[in-house]
Every structure is written in C-alpha cells, then in structure tokens.
Image (cartoon, rainbow, N blue to C red):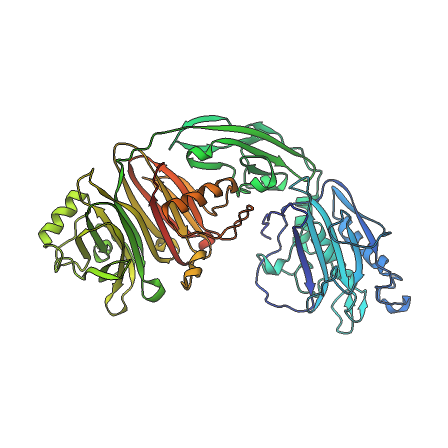
Length: 608
C-alpha cells in the first residue's frame, strides 16, 4: 500500500513544481509515490499540443514499432491510458496555435531542445512544470510537459525497454501523471514498481499504486465543503491559553480531510503572504495569549472546485508588568561534549551593585536515584569567566572541594534557593560567587574527554529588591533527539508578570564559525505540564517579525538575518512572552528530528 503524502503547492505565479523522468538514477532512495496535495477542478483538462512541429524528431510510419504515424497519436494513447481511469476529469487536447511560453495560463505539451531556454539535465527524457492556481490555493493552475528532442532514437512500443530506442508512450504517461499531481515513487516514500518512478523502466502502464491514487483523487466529483461550526471569537487576558478549532460538514477535520478538501489559516489579513504554517493541524494553537496575537484570523476551506472563508476575532486584554519581578533561577539541561559540543552557558548581571550567584553543573546526581536520567555526565568541570576580557572568575571540579565557599555554606544556600540536594562525595561542580554587573560565561567540560547530559543552573541568591538582577541566560550546546534535546528552565519571581524575549538559534551560528549547527530549531515553552507556546520559524506569522526585530535590538541580541520585505530565510525560533510568576521550561529540538549545535537565549525585556 502506498503512503499518500499531501505536499502544499505554492500559490504565486512564479512558484512551480518541476519533475523530470531520467534514463538513469542520480541518487535514488527507497521512497513511495506521493500526490502533490492539490488537484484539478472537475471537468475537461485542456492541453494545447504541438508534438509534430519542426522541433519534433523526424519519423516515418514504418519507424514506430506500435504503428502510430504521428507523435500526436502516441500522446493520445497516453491520454487514453489515464482517461480510462479518471472520473471527475478527462484529459483533452487542441492544436497549439501560439508559441509555447512558461506561466502563460495554458497547459502546453511539445518537443523542444531546451526547457524554456534552459538546458535539460543529463539523461532527462521529459519534464513537467506545474504551477499553482493564483485564485485557488487548492487547485493546480497550469501544467506544461516538454519532451527532450535531443534524445536519440525516440520510438513508441510496449513491453520491456529496448536498448536501441526510447519509448515516448511510457514517458508521456509518466509526465501526464505529474501534470495531474503525482510525484516520483522512488524519491518520496516506498520502493515500488510503478511508471511514476523517476527512472524509466520496463513498466509501460499504470501500476496498482497509480490506479489507487487516481481513484482517490480523481474518482468522484468533489463535494462542496461547508463550515458547520466556525471558530469562536474570544476576549482573553494575557497568558490565557487560546486555540481555534472548527467543524466541516458536521465533524472536526481528520486525517482523511485532505482527500476532499483542504484548509489554512491567515493572520492578520486574508492575503497569501499572511498564510500560517498550519496545513495539516486541525486546531490553530496560539498558546498563552500575547498583546500582538490580537486581531482577525481567517479560516480558508476549499478544494480544487471551490474556496470559502470565515473570520474570527481575538481580543487580548492588556496587563501591567512589574518592574520588581526577576528571574530567580535559570537552568539548562543539555549534552556536554568536547570541541563544538562543549556546553557553554552565558548570563548577564544587570544593574549597579554586585550580585551573589550560585552556579551548578550537575551530572552524576542527575543520573542517580531518584532522577535516574540515562547518559549523564560522570564528572563535569565548571569554569566561570568574565566574557568581556576572559578573566577567570573561578572554577570547580567536585563541589565539596571548593575555593568559593564551604560545602556547608553551599548546601544551605542551595536549600534556601530551592535547589535539589547534592549528595556527599558526588562529582558535580558548584560555584558560589559575588559578581559585579557584566556578562559571564560558564563552560562545562569533563575529565579525559567525558561527555553526557548535564544540568547547568544559575540562582540569584540575594534577597529580592536589590540594585542588580539576572537579566539574560544563553546556553550553546548539542541538541540531540528523543531524551537528548536541550531543556532550559527559568523561574519568574515577583509581584506580577514580566516580558521576556526567547530565542532558539541554529542556522545563524554559522556566521560565528560554529560547526555542525542545528539547521531548523523548534522551540516549545511549558508552564508546568502545559504547553503554552510552540515556535518553529520566526516569520510565522510574518506580521510579528518587525516586533521581534525591534525587541532584539532593544535587548542587544545579535541580529538574525531576514528580508525586510517579508521573507525570512533563517529557520530560527523567536518569541516575545509576557509571563506570570512561576516556573517555566523551554525545550529546543530539531524540526523533524534534526540534530546539531544550537543556542537558547532568554532576555529580560526592558519596558518603556
């Protein structure tokens, strides 16, 4: 059974999906055929055809093994193969009367020695270029099929491939499959014998997979989806959890919804540039409401035949933030290795006076009962330096052998700060230091190349209301998958909420010569056990990007490259959250299970 994967087809006229059939494999993978996720509306699918023009290979009737007399007749055989299985559409043709051109609103099929002026790839027999419909996101708007006339010995026949000739008929069947939305089996999911594979083979007609897909996507006329329960408009307070859901035809959208309709969300205006990245999620999860979330959300529902939309309003009541609220505890659980995988934690002491800070690198205790975390670091060594000039502040290997404080004092301060107890004799590392305002960096390494999971913690152990505070946490380390993702924690302590800028940076670290970076970060924010925010790419929605750019400048964070016109080309996770007092955790993982080095940052956002 094939796996049907729905892939969004981009809407703008310049956007296209191109698929080619080759003589030999360049880099094959054992994957399955997929459907493009968008289809043609019901009715005749008209192609403008010029297969026998001056660019076509010269033939005589005796040359074609199936006794067809023109290339157009061979193409009609390919049409018939599909039309015998298609239900709600039929492929029909008319003679091409104008010069073919890309993106002209007409479906065109012809021979050429180039693809609209660009050379065919090596070994490419034919190529299909498919465009989205500019008026309907769920419809294909144009498909052009171009056969390579520089290929020698074109012919038409049935059965196994012949080394002496190329079979136009099976190539045409393949390319017409692309034209109606099918992709390559061997490049997208399952190892099957099918004419839609990217490499021409002995298969000369539709296989069971293509027949199944044709029935699913083009068997019966498309129904008209109706929104029977629209998402409700809401008025909420900052921090309230918000999600928007709906029903279509009396039921929530499910896994099979895409077979007959699709849906999408837009914010703050119903224009393509404001499309949210929620193609397959039946619920739009906004999370802990923020002032910038307020506005109009538009739900679009449709299929290739019809498109409709409904609007909902979100109102977010403002909240007064407290200048006395502080970050009393910052922590990160991450992998500590060597080289580029060395765990590096930075924090900022802001204000005018000194700040007493407890810094811990806990590995062995994390791996023992009652925590029993697998893969922990056996013997971390903690080094703290002043970032501005690299001056060593202090270092520690085993917490009870300590130059900064006695073991008894460390235990008392830890208990008062709410930290868990370290057992006697453990090889965890601790520093208890008085720090002047500035930027500090703590590095966690191991003896003899040891590596593993570590929790690095920084506690503000002064009484509230002093002249300085912890204003920033940043941790750079290796983000694995499963239990090896990076987890940062923070405690917001004070009389009221406060705003923080949170970033998970991966790709931009290349600009700082960091090797092995995490290409696509995914940030998930928890309040206790509740997910309160999920952030993938920081240009979703694009309307928030200017706000985040301004916030980064305000806190002094290094910039993340972006396009001021509205398209971000770095897949970083950035959000601005007003948080009520309490404990929060930030999980950084790789989208789709990616791994690599990433940076998690929390900035105390100064209010005007």
